[in-house]
Image (cartoon, rainbow, N blue to C red; front, side, top):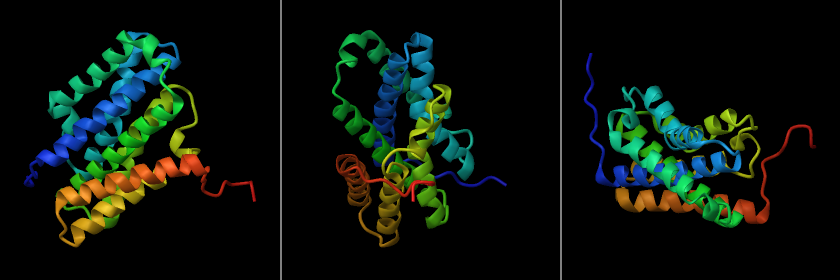
Length: 211
C-alpha cells in the first residue's frame, strides 16, 4: 500500500544541504590527509556527506533515499570534494580547531535534519532521536571504515551523544508544538555547543576496561 510522502520543508532542505556541504568537505579533507586520488576524494566526500541520510531513509521507509532521488545532494557533495582537491595546499593548513568546528557543525545540522525527517514520516519520537543520531554519525562511520580507522563515534569525546542531544531537543520542541525554526536552531546549537565544549573540557563517556 502506498503511503503519502511528506514534502520537505524549505528549512529542512536548507539544513540538509548545509550539512551535506560541510561533511563533503570534511570527507574530502580526510581523503587528502590519506593521500587518496581525485576518485578517492569524491567517494569519501559522497559517503561522508550522504551515508547517514541514506541509512536513515532506508530505515524509515523513504525509498529511494532523498540523496539518490534529488541530484542536488550528489552535486553538492562532489562540489565540496572538487573544491578541496583544487585547493589542497590551503586545506592542509586549516587549523585543527576549525576542522573540529566544521565537523561539529555538520554533526549538528544532520542530527537535526534526521530527527525532523523521521518525525515527518510518523516515526515514534524515541526512534526519531535515534534516526537523528544515525544521520549525524552514519556517514563519518562509513568514511572511517573505508580508511581502516576505528570510527570516530566509538572513541571521540561526546560525539554521538551530542547528536542524540540535538535530536532530542527537536523531538521535545516538536512535541510541545513550538515553532519549527526556533526548535531547529536550538537543536543545532545544543549539539554544536555540547560537542565543542566536550573537546575543550576533554569530556568522555566511561571507557570499558579503564575503571
